[in-house]
Length: 266
Ligand SMILES: NC(=O)c1ccc[n+]([C@@H]2O[C@H](COP(=O)([O-])OP(=O)(O)OC[C@H]3O[C@@H](n4cnc5c(N)ncnc54)[C@H](OP(=O)(O)O)[C@@H]3O)[C@@H](O)[C@H]2O)c1
Image 1 (tube, rainbow, N blue to C red):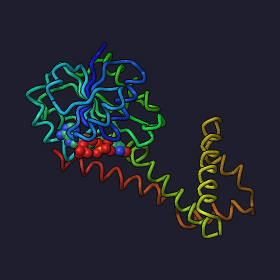
Image 2 (image 1 turned 135 degrees about the horizontal axis):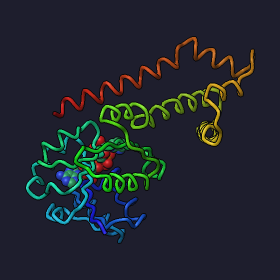
Image 3 (image 1 turned 180 degrees about the vertical axis):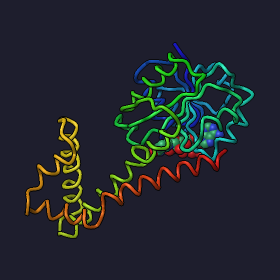
Image 4 (image 1 turned 180 degrees about the horizontal axis):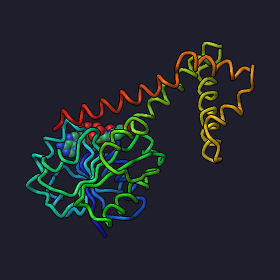
């Protein structure tokens, strides 16, 4: 069985560690610097957690799941312990394959872009490997990533930045639209609990219809909206205010920022 070590037992790191543990596909251990977090993880009696980097020598695969600003410090601490045979899987936003290769003096890197619903097995992750990563390891990491939802390989790192603009940051865009809808519901006199039910159930229903049928989103909109009707009044208002274009502009701003951050970290 392969040995996988996750550095950073926070939101993302723990989610992947738990996915690996539950799928029983590898021996898994976590390294974290917070004594409180280590005690918390060990108390669950599932995975072992430690503060020592020494265990890294035993790893086949290392997940890098610390905040990007901490990464250079971690690289300094572990670069004499890790080796070129090991595969490194990074979920760190904006940290390029080249930066990780240079920071650690290794070659085999898989860079991922996950999103927050990974913690409830509804995540969306894209990934790309450096040319030194073989097919077997790419497939293994693909199956690990799928334990937290859906995952697929992209062609290059630019596409990782592009997925940041859609799924990586997209969860927050959806919350933004939901917030507008829930706020409007409360303005119409519904309680916050009723507004939550109205908003969540409307999203859930629309998503299931979209997923379960091969019908375009435009067709779905037309099925709800009849000419001169209530829905058309709302959609016309969105169109007059260029809401579609504004959302698209938001995704472009997000991707531009991802590229900017990646450049800063070089
Ligand atoms: N959360 C998301 O939705 C999301 C989405 C896409 C990508 N990501 C990426 O995922 C990475 C992790 O984010 P997160 O939200 O999981 O952060 P997080 O919850 O803060 O987790 C990071 C963990 O690493 C620990 N840590 C700090 N320094 C360390 C060190 N030197 N060695 C080992 N562990 C150390 C932290 O401990 P302390 O708390 O004591 O510092 C914390 O437990 C980030 O790079 C982020 O860009 C996150």
